[in-house]
Image 1 (cartoon, rainbow, N blue to C red):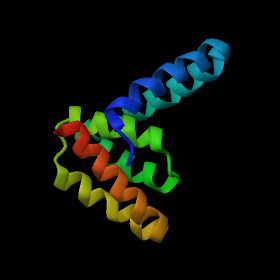
Image 2 (tube, rainbow, N blue to C red):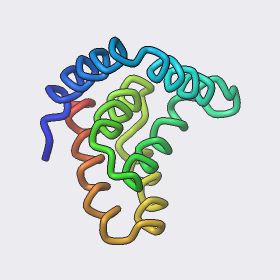
Image 3 (cartoon, rainbow, N blue to C red):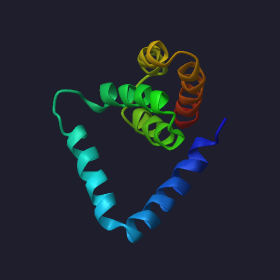
Length: 112
């Protein structure tokens, strides 16, 4: 498993370097990400476990690291995260099962 609290800052630093080289790309991503967060219908405590389930289906370790931290900050419970992950498992079968274990492990590292 990844050491998520150690990985996330390194990832953000690397993304910052990419952003310096391709600022319009990073700005476009940040606009899209911000728009999703501003929907107003789902709070972060609901949205972040959903995001973790999506992260599992896309097999994005960086996304898992960042969204597990966001879910912990939003005070999502382990049970809430665990209840969102079966959607990914159902949609992605075996690969999602492996990444769900990784996402739950990452969340555990973030929330203590």
